[in-house]
Image 1 (tube, one colour):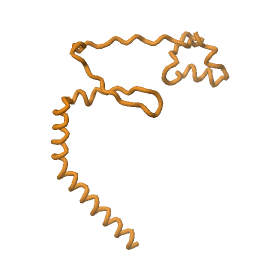
Image 2 (cartoon, helix red, strand yellow):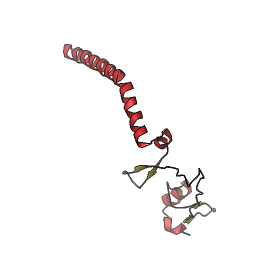
Image 3 (cartoon, helix red, strand yellow):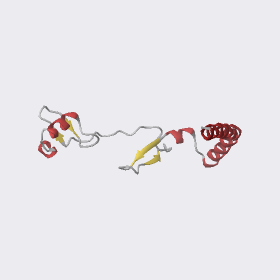
Length: 117
């Protein structure tokens, strides 16, 4: 038991040391980040305006910047056409998670292709 108690004491001591170092270096790190942001012209908006692109596990975050030509105008997004239509008029583009109505039909043994438009 003494080994466990010694280890727990060491863990507490090391955690306190880590917290002390973090507190001492916090202001210095923030100043370095601000200096780099100033040097590269990065704003807080640049840091928060990200978009996930790609498919699968290796997704990449790309920064979306508004250019001077944009003048803050938002782009209109055209909805994706439906690829599948259900028996009760439901529709699905084939993107994203399979809707519950399609899941139920597939569970009954039907194929997605049976409902292709």
